[in-house]
Length: 246
Ligand code: E4P
Image 1 (tube, rainbow, N blue to C red):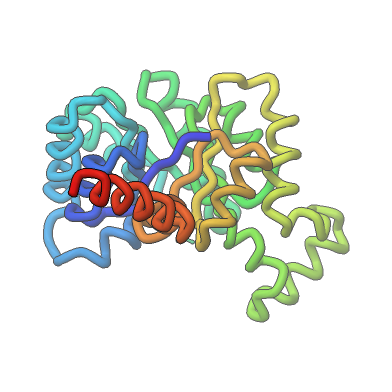
Image 2 (cartoon, rainbow, N blue to C red; image 1 turned 180 degrees about the vertical axis):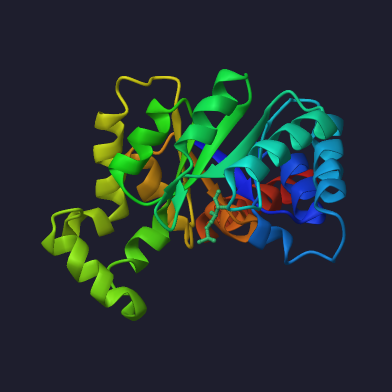
């Protein structure tokens, strides 16, 4: 399992790169909306500058912000041209309100643009995105779980369950990851990114269930590295050595 940082915050990105915690960065328009107002592209260029300074050519995923395929193509090509970053993936949602975006995924992939097909909730969405050529397919781990209980979607959930479009196990993200790994077997180049991570245990469980990559907030990544017994042991070593030197 590889760890990515899910953030658009320049301070966090700089610190995460320097700390050696991560092998990539994922962003989205909601994460960017938490940052000071400005130009989307300028902010992404600032992220790229940090990555270039880091020098490891780590993965960066940047999302389009349109629901129209022709605008998605335009933005994807513009990002690619303006950011000039080799390891850039363009995030394209799998669909929206019944409209498939897999044609965009297919065409961009055919043009040599790396695509991260995002907002997937089911094993079939993940495998269909991989079949369309996506290099990364992103599962929204906790939003999958929320789908079982969101009251506003009660009617549509019931209808989907009755029609057998989904089953109850489709709301269990670890099950989704296990099934997706089996369905993705014909597409070995596609890697599953588990996003929408809310705790340290989510990271471990998603990794064990089959996510190739888990992307999490800086706070959660730092918590994953922390243990009171590690602090205790290191404290002991330092104290013992100090006493020996005295
Ligand atoms: C992943 O690529 C997404 O940026 C992210 O993890 C979305 O999850 P959230 O909006 O539920 O936090």
